[in-house]
Image 1 (spheres, helix red, strand yellow):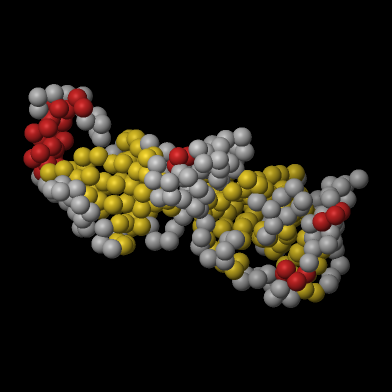
Image 2 (cartoon, rainbow, N blue to C red):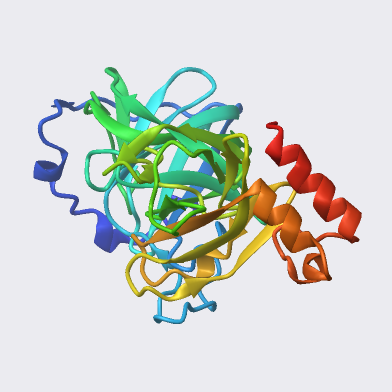
Length: 327
C-alpha cells in the first residue's frame, strides 16, 4: 500500500463549495516522474510564544502550542507547477508528485488580511515568511485523504510565503503568531508620555523594523504588523542630552510585567509571559537627563544601575557624558 492509499479515506468528501469562487476543471491524474517527491507540511499556532513547536509548554494563562487544522496551503515547486491542498484529519498538508528542490509554500492568512505573522520553524531557528499574494492558473488541487487530483486555478489572496526544500520524503513545520508590540516614551522631567524624544526600532527574530507611526502622539507601533516572538525587543535612540534610565514591559491584556533584559544596546522581552495568542508587549521607556545620570553615577550609584550594568564609576560617567553630547 503506497503513502497516498494509506491516507485517511474519511477525508475524501471535501466540499467543493469551500473552494469557491475558483474554477474547477476535471483532468487526468498527473504522471509521476523519478524526479518528484512528497512534502508533508504541518502548520501550528505558536500560542506558547517562542517560535518553536512544543505542545507540552504552557503559559501562565494556560495557552500551549496547537496544530492548526482546516484552511488551505499552496505550493509552487521548483519546476514552476502550482498545487493546493487542504489538511488531513491530523492537520498535515501532503503534497506528493512534486518536483524535487526548492519550493515556495504559501499559508493562507486565516482572516484574509495581515493579521498574523508566519515563519518556517527549524528546531531553534525561525525564518520569517513575508506576506505575498497567491494567484495562479493551470494548477492542481490535491484532495486530502485520496489520490484524486483536479485541474485548478487558485484564488487571489494574501498568504505567508516561505521556501522549503523538497526531497523524496520531506517534512516542514510552519508557525503563525499574533504577537504585537508597542512603546510609550516617558518624559525625563515628570514621567508623562512624550513624543519626539526618542527613535524606536522594533526587533523580532533577526529583523529590524523601523517605525515612526505615533498613536495619540505617544505610542509607537510597527504599523499593523505581527512579530515573531523570538528575540522580541526594541532599540531606543534618545535625542542628545537624554538617556534611557529604564525599560519595562507588560502584557497588554493581563497587565502582568514581562521580564526585560538588555544586551548589545537593545532591550529584549520574554514573550512567553504574554497572556493570550493575540497579546501585545507594551514597552515603557523612562528617559533621564544626561546631567542627572552623571550625578547618579557618583557615590556608588553606578552599582545599582541595570540598564546598562557598569563595571565602575568612570564607565558610568563616560556613558552619560557621551549621551549629553549626542550620539
